Amino acid sequence: MDDPDALRLLGLLAFRGGPTDCTGTRDVAPDPRALISVALAYRDDELLTRVAADATATVVRQAAAIAAAHLRGDQDLVAALAPDHLADHPDDDLVRWIADQTTRMTPDHANTPSKKEHR
Image (cartoon, rainbow, N blue to C red):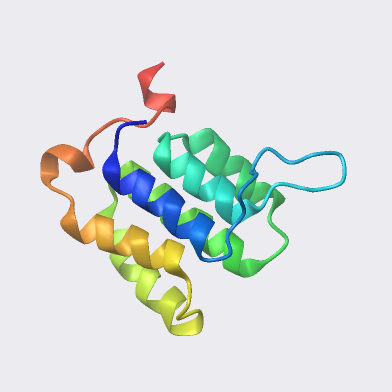
């Protein structure tokens, strides 16, 4: 992973009380927000789909939907969903990061295929 923005995201999660082990163990389930950040870093839409399907909290489902829209390059959907999400969850650095990345995307970067589209 050479994307400095993705590394910044993972560092942000790790140093603000976020999970440091997203692999999980028998006793510890992986944190869905860490899995969303990993899915973003590796452009893995299948992982985002699993996180959304397994989510028990609306905030996680919303974050996964916003992340999936970001991976698809759907800037309009991110622009529509992120502000409402952040109004309800102003401390959500993950969605704030996604919204910031989306506003900085160029047309060429917006069309970068996700992991699933590479197959």
